[in-house]
Length: 158
Image (tube, rainbow, N blue to C red; front, side):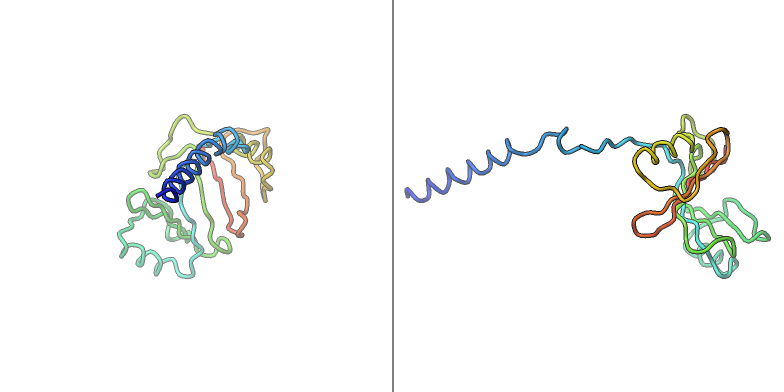
C-alpha cells in the first residue's frame, strides 16, 4: 500500500513538474513568424503532351480556367485546386503563388506586394534565385528553391 501511494505521488509530481517546466510561448517562438499574403496557390506542371494532360485532368473533374492551348499552356481548376499545364516552357514542376489574386484569378485586397515578400525573405536569410526590381511597382516575380530542391515562383500579375 505504501508503495502504491509513493508511486502515485511520484506520478503526480512528475506531471506537475512537466507542466510547470515547459517552455513559455515566447521561448518556443524564437524565430519570428510573419504571415505573408502569398495569394492563390497552384502547381505548375511541365507536361509532355498538353492535350493528353488536359484530357487526363478533365477526367479528374478539372475545367479550363484560362490559358491558351495553341500557346501550350492551360490553367485548370477543380474547386479551390489550381493546376497549370505548361508544355515546353520550363524544366520540372513549380509551386506557384500569385499575390493579389484568389483562386479564380480575381483581385484581392489587401495583399502583400511581391517586393515586400522579397524583402522579408531576404531579411530571413532565404536565398532567392531571381529577384524583383525594387524600384518598380506592379507585376513582378521572384523565385526560390526549398530545401528539397522544389522551385517556388511568387508571381504577381498586378
